[in-house]
Amino acid sequence: MGFYDYGMGPWVMGPQWNNSQTALNLSANDVKNAFALWLAWQGNPHLKLGNVSEKDTDTIIVDIVTTDTRSYRRC
Image (cartoon, rainbow, N blue to C red; front, side):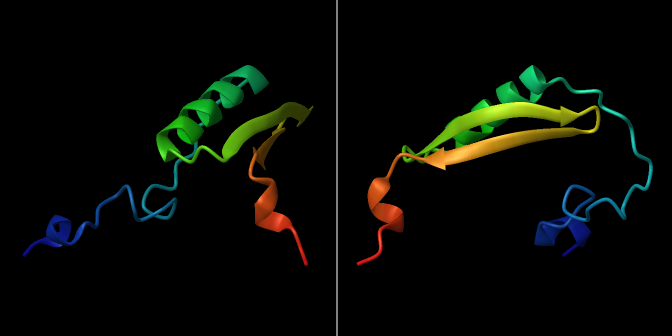
């Protein structure tokens, strides 16, 4: 068995595998669309995309909220 037979590869090694970083220059709308696709892929009907806002030029805040009100009730 080789390196890739165990499911390992550069995609699971994290940023240490390739130390070059590229500025993405994403807008809040780009991030909103990416998270909407990711949430749809997750297939959890109780999660939805909340507010997406740009805090500053380097930070975009994404809220993921639950529609299942029973999840966090305390008795």
